[in-house]
Image (cartoon, helix red, strand yellow):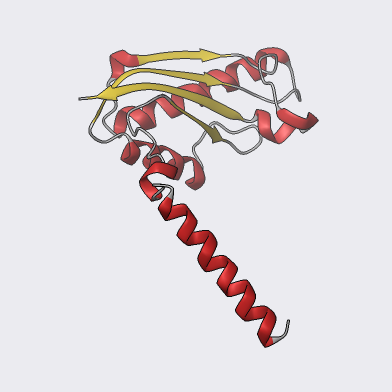
Length: 149
């Protein structure tokens, strides 16, 4: 790009930016701040055939806890899932253990125990995007309803 082209491009950029401010648009009009106390969904992933929380799982729980400080947690739905390897009964039990591990970790963070609804779907309830199935099924889904205090 030649010097003349750079000057023209800079001038067009300045005119374009000036046009935005003259239309009454500012950053606050363009960027909405998400409500910290709205519904949240996050997944907690597990190692194969394990129900113990990984460091990444603990981080996800701690991060969501921080996001929801100052909110009243109304309900928490935790659904444990497993992949399709192994026997159905073993997968169901593993799913239950995963869900309970997440609930225990959330309760330890101070989340209200009466708000929890715990379920387990074994290998039958896991739906994953794009056909990538096994690793994504090794998780617990957490759905939180929270409102401002």
